[in-house]
Image (tube, rainbow, N blue to C red; front, side):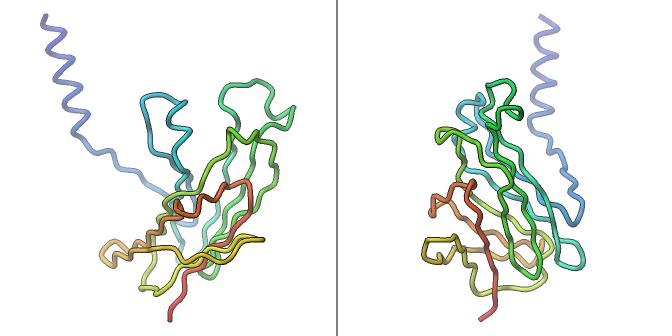
Length: 167
């Protein structure tokens, strides 16, 4: 019985504690909202954390497969995408696109850290589609620009650019 109460105390302690995430400037990290299992979490949109360096540049990449198969690289059944930011333009370039349609990810919320000024417009461009204006929020206290591409239902196996501009 004592071990049970100790376990409850430990769980309560760790569930109420925040764990800091330190991200090196100049990098882009993909993220996804967790769920109770990987089947459901893989249905959530893919977000990006963009940590700009002093020059306003960042880079990152994403490898994504079906989460179940073996030999996905040898069989080419995966997605390899590179993300970069330069001069207030987030670009994705797809190197390998071998995912089945059921395994495709949509782009969700993007958080850009290190933005030192407010912008009036965020625009998403995808070849063959009309440009889309994305809703955005700027928080000057933490220097974060956040925008949500979820309403566009853009699957990331297609390259895109997102630009933030002043009026």
